[in-house]
Each structure stands twice: as C-alpha cells, then as structure tokens.
Length: 148
Image (cartoon, rainbow, N blue to C red; front, side, top):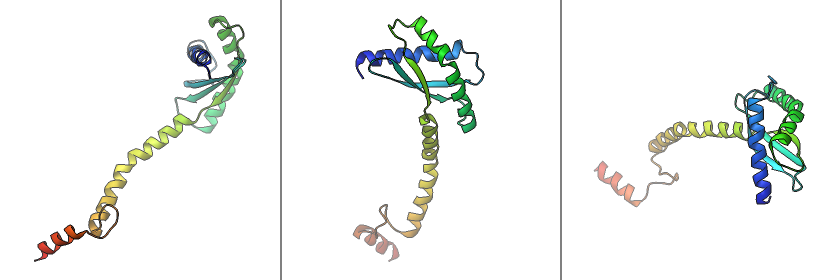
C-alpha cells in the first residue's frame, strides 16, 4: 500500500473504533478492538479486522460478527460525515483471531519455566550435560577425584 492508503486506512480504523465505542447502541457488538484495516488501491473497499476484548467463545464471536454486519451502513454513514473522502469505502468486517492466538501462546510460554525446571532435574539425575551427551573429560576427572 502507498503512504496515502496507509494514512487513510489508519484514519478509518480510528474513526470506526470511535463510532463503535461511542455511538453504537447494538448490544451484540460489545467490547472489541479494530486491529487493522486493509484498504483497496482505489479506496472503494475496506476490510476491517476486529477482535473481541472479552473471551473468544465461538458463539459470542459469531454474535458480534452479526452485529457488525448489521451496523456497517451506520458506520459507513458516520465515516462519510467525518472523513474528507471523495468516496466512502464499502466496509466489510472480518474476525481477527490473532489476539486470542497471542494469549494462547503467551500462556504456553509462561508454563515453560516449570517444564524447564523439570527437565533440569532429569538432566542432573542422569549425569548428562545440557545436550544429553556423556560427561566430558573435565567432568570425568572431577568425578574420579571426588570418588578417590
């Protein structure tokens, strides 16, 4: 995308987020964030990627998607009134699962220190090094010196 398209996409993202937060009365929409906007080169189509701030329950996500589809005309009228564009792009909302995936990966990473500590205990008990190799010459000398 060109710099102009990027700038307009960012303006659209900010304005749509404001309209949904401040002026939407549809209870299905709830708390969500507009993660990014993909704008066509001729500025006639805008795909808005969104992610719920609450749980990622599939039924709730589907309900929010229906609410956003229902509100797209309302949001487009507000964009036309508040942005200085010759043509207001048609809006299409798509769910962006990246925030849920990020949370899942973060929880997996947080569980790693526990797994790492368990692995460290197994390495010490087996007498093998970090790479699972047999003790080196220096380690053998230390072991022999301790036994004598």
